[in-house]
Length: 120
Image (cartoon, rainbow, N blue to C red; front, side, top):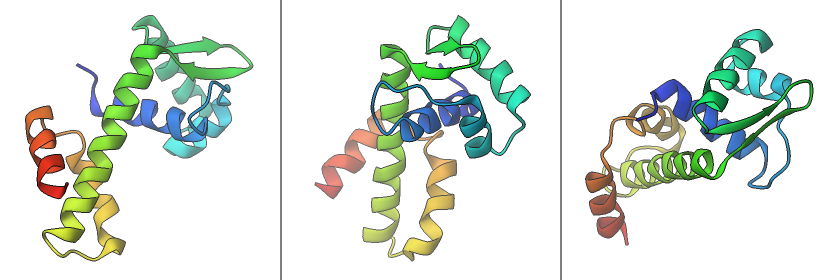
């Protein structure tokens, strides 16, 4: 089970790679995560040890198949939570992103599937 920090890193690698196999620079990832490059590199090395990313020193990082699976699941959770907050709870779009950032890590797959069914 990935931590919320690992999930956030994986999600950002996915978003920065624009859903392709291209490498994401460590500087770009660090900027997206709002950390210094050394912190991002340390985190990426740990994720590489877990088989979630491929780290190419001085070139960048890309997701493995397992890392991509986790990242897509987190992104799906985020988007479904946003949709639920707007469509069902009638929250303003300008406020739902921050809420979804928190909830995407807490929601179970069972609840997520029920949300998806509810939202169609």
